[in-house]
Image 1 (cartoon, rainbow, N blue to C red):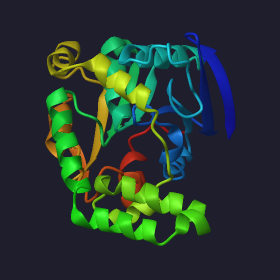
Image 2 (cartoon, one colour):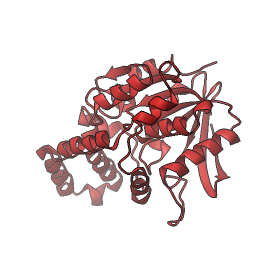
Image 3 (tube, rainbow, N blue to C red):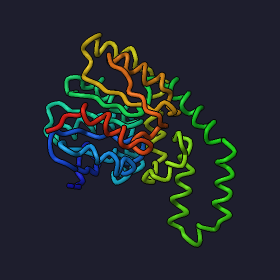
Length: 280
């Protein structure tokens, strides 16, 4: 494993390389998160290939000053700069959640640079579908059991007696709505989202709808080889993934999970992606 920080486009970007073989660039979600919460599960895909991770600008170990722009165009430009730095003529992108939309945005801006696209629980191509996701997630997080569990955790006094355990359990409750079985939330590596970055990305996208541009960029039969993986119980609507898949002339591999198939169904996740991604 190799970790380093690189200077590009006026910011410092943390990168991590693991494995050996054909390269796959991994795009984490958020926006404003970091790659760690994809681990250790995503590293299981490093057998026979190189996984290239990075913390996107404004998140994780790639912080930026408050006056540094962090909109979607800057994220796409960073990815293009990294592709050039890594000397990749064409890239295979493995994008999770927001990272799936980032992969699509990069493909629209640099279609000739795309080798393959693997989109896992991808954020949708329209703001309307994203609004539906936010609505569904809010309903899940408003379930009475979540409030009860939070109250019980506070009453247990763990914040004083075992602060680390308290943080882990509090995090699991904060992401419970993303899971089909909320008990699996404890298995996700905790992460933080930089709110300014998250807000700036969605604000830069506005009332977006990239369906027509995608169809124009990749007319029937010309889309890059693509794979979509999505949980049946994901608050990110399955129909949004089906819509994206149809525009890419492919289908959707459906797993009985919520928004984090790498956590809820690790073996099925690896089994679905491994044959698709390039390997030695």
